[in-house]
Length: 229
Image (cartoon, rainbow, N blue to C red; front, side, top):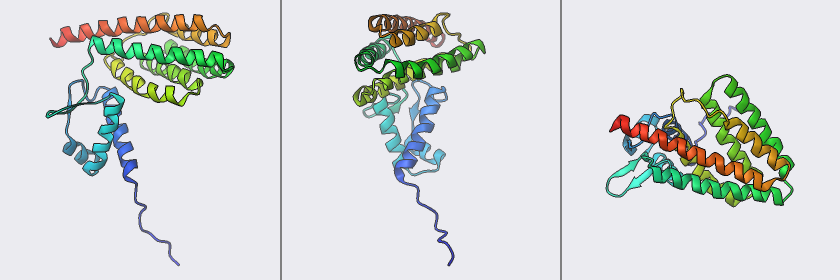
């Protein structure tokens, strides 16, 4: 008996996820610039899907903070302000500080160090190769792994949004931008302090890391404004 050759129907949710990933990549990589308006009909045609999955994908990205819905106007890629940068990193500091304290208080330090040390070594290799985009990517991997090591579903759920918005902030930087000289060492210090259960030390380095990032991003924002102003 011949096998049924009827093609398997791909669930609508899968289409929405695929479309969402494509749009997310286009935003992060700068294909869709801050301020760009998204057209549901045009996106559906370009992806070869119906408008339903596109609408679902856009709603998910709005929840992540990668898109912004403006009543009576449409859906846009957000234009980050200095206030947005302050708010994002303040939220990250609160969440990641909570993760550090949870790791230390629940005997997860050794497992956390193992995961973080692997990423730091990847950052070191990328730095030596002069691949600054990869350094930045490993930076975000480090912080994602840090929160994951706390094994708190709620912390991870909240972190998902702010890390997406962080990626949007970092998309303002170009491939030619070099990382700070002490960037990799800061991550190494955080990992080492966690292994030693030096909670206050890890939090202090984390706070400095975020403060420096805010200064750098605001400086880039000022340059961007001057060039487009």
